[in-house]
Image (cartoon, rainbow, N blue to C red; front, side, top):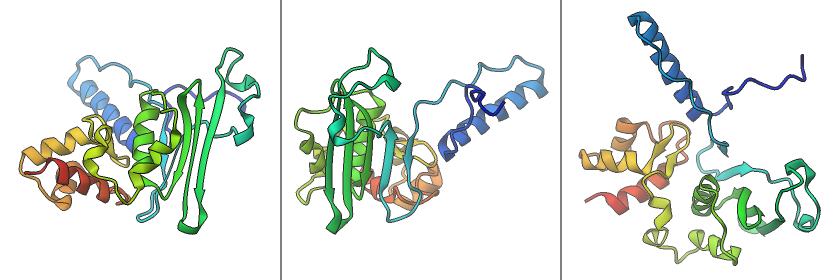
Length: 215
């Protein structure tokens, strides 16, 4: 019926998971044609991080962002009766089109929205995917988009498993491997890895990785 739960492993509507599903399905077809045992089932996708696919527009969201600023003391039964305390931090700069909202549960990042703050969004994405605890002073996370930010200061943003291109699921590690193979421009990285060839919104991040790792 219409109220039935969707099957596990269903598509999320994002390009990256779609590519992974297509690769898995192609491998299943090859195995069937070759008469060999097919590979394991496609592993479930992690919770999606959604990025608005428009060049020059930096909007990223993930997780549960429903709680409001004054919901910190309310019981959230939707998350389970044993769920932890919810805390919301919010910062807005309408004049410059910037906004960040962070929702934590017992200090762990449970959801966020970031507008016009691309480096802060990248850091929050890493923290969300790793289930990390936020610093007590949430404003420290805003420094990544400050005028005095140095890429070398954001070490976590350059971890090997940090995703640079969400359209095609390209990580920092994949880009550094291409750099080692002689690809030293944004265009060359795009040709070698497909990074930046979707919406194009990650070309700035690719350039930062190149600045840090290219000889």
